[in-house]
Length: 78
Image (cartoon, rainbow, N blue to C red; front, side, top):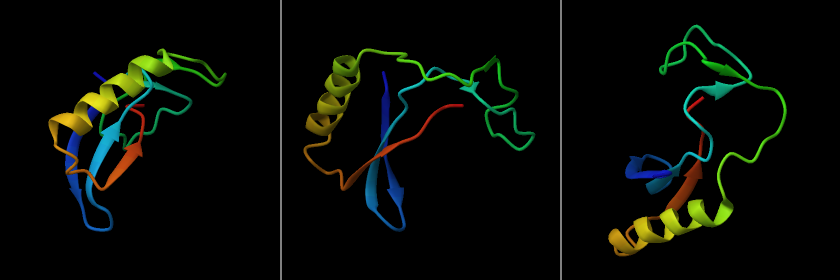
């Protein structure tokens, strides 16, 4: 599952979050990261998941929420 929410946003209303990268795959290991230390340091671009799999999950979330989503926000778990 790639999408989560929708979560309330002060600026955007209800935002559906989408995380298209594996957990803790990042080019940094910030000490303040809410997810802890980075397990998989990467600097090269990669395709982690099939685009259609991500899009299918987004469609399912939009349908499940009956269109009650104002924005879609892409963010990583890195």
